[in-house]
Length: 119
Image 1 (tube, rainbow, N blue to C red):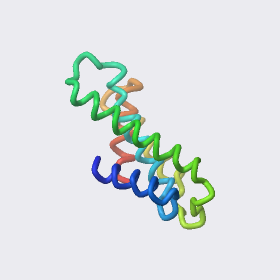
Image 2: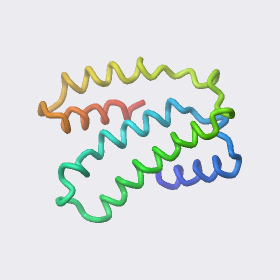
Image 3: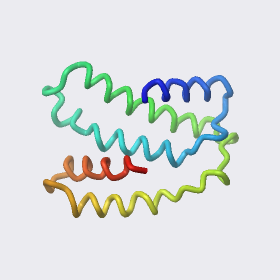
Image 4: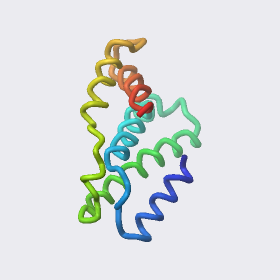
């Protein structure tokens, strides 16, 4: 997955364009990484350095890609990005609240990330 992100970033940098890339998909990736890796904040002492670097790298690269979408906004093809985020996020949020194992913020967001990852 990380190699794919590197290729995507290299392609955007080389072409100075985000044409042909779905911003909606990149927003979903960012949501998955941020909600999945919240344990960085709450359980940082329990993790190896490899996991911390791995998680921070995924969150940072997803954020960088979204920033590039705004930097190269003129090249973004909105008409081809027809994915409705509300249709995906709303049911996943409801399912996460109903089907989580424990009712605390971290656990509900972890469950949300599992549902959203399927898209």
